Image 1 (tube, rainbow, N blue to C red):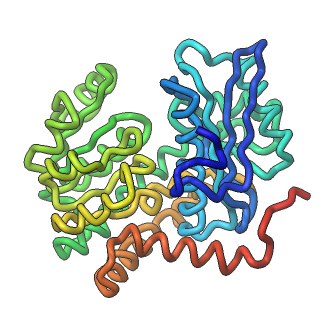
Image 2 (tube, rainbow, N blue to C red):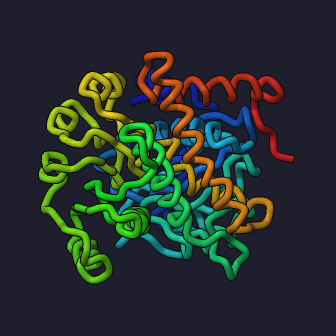
Length: 359
């Protein structure tokens, strides 16, 4: 697949950079969708893609999502994303991460990186040895630490707003929530839900996640697969693993009446949002509710203050409530309402500078 011939929903990127360092084994793609609002901020995903085409597709898709996420969160930042093609358990090394950091630095600040699937705070500390344009570093190195903390808080805030919209009360108490993916974000989200009085049913492909849940959140139950989870009697479905969780098949099986989750790009293809609406399932757009993490790492750019970042992330509740109300008023899916607001901000503010140039 050529970059310029990408599917229509993945076009419009400013820049796509292919990075290779044979000595360390690095193969990475950095995609910058837009810098209309400022330098492009987005995490680095380390994943064993089946093909180079899959890696390119993910980089393009995720970077566009980051542009919309940052715009909707009110940040003066554009959207970008990087993917490292490989197995983080076997291919990751200091040499590889430092080589990657040199590529990030070569962009002169047009792209600012952070953690994502397969990368951690300790990895960002290594990348930062080679680049100034790194967030999500450890607190001892002047960073914000684990961004999954506020990502989960934001998802929980969006879920509360969706609960209020659906059932009249901004609480999950007495509701059954199905969480697919007990990773960095899912674990924190389960904690918020249990403390709010929700019944949690979870699933994950990892046995380690099952063991963690049993040891740390024994109140929650575990099922063997995502299919089993979405077909069960749950009120809320929270996709918190990889993208594409909502497709024709899964929406058809889904028994929940609300979907709010941490995963990026949950809609497998355009039109899924209409399927959800036709079935009466309330969907809070993923890039809206999972923006707590990017709010956290963005705060790091000017000198991190957790209380300030959490206050900003708490507004995800208000933004979600407003978008759900707008969707009802205009008789459009919430995903479309959110898209329009993000696109309007990028267009209006982007007239001040169409392409960000590092100083």
